[in-house]
Image (cartoon, protein in one colour):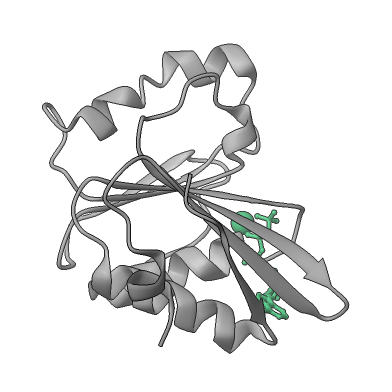
Length: 156
Ligand SMILES: Nc1ncnc2c1ncn2[C@@H]1O[C@H](COP(=O)(O)OP(=O)(O)OP(=O)(O)O)[C@@H](O)[C@H]1O
Ligand SMILES: [Mg+2]
């Protein structure tokens, strides 16, 4: 397994900028698991990804109550999930594999907040762990599966 990439995100703009780069560079069929305590910046990062895909940032709210929000006005479809309110049985019933198999659903970028709720994972994904570091945040990015170039995706 390739070694993880650790980035310090000193302010909300840095979180947004990381998302922006990902949104500009990720290829279709990318799944991102955004793990981290309350308020570590998962939604901020998702908004950056949306902006990088060319989706109007103001549209991207946290789908805490809707679970899944889908955007089709960017470079690629963007599927933004927040599983905070989901029970484990509920995760199975969502059939998220239809997204990453990409047969019924148009392949795009999928960002999942609270992926700890999932009982199954795709074979290939980016795992992004966000942590509080005082008033800053630290992101640890791990690529799972083949064909990722973390430095090219994440660094300026
Ligand atoms: N790198 C950063 N440094 C400091 N503050 C940040 C950073 N990134 C984001 N924030 C701020 O942290 C707050 C929480 O961000 P956000 O809502 O994105 O977190 P979240 O992980 O989605 O939270 P939740 O678990 O409630 O969904 C926001 O005010 C945001 O501006
Ligand atoms: Mg959130």
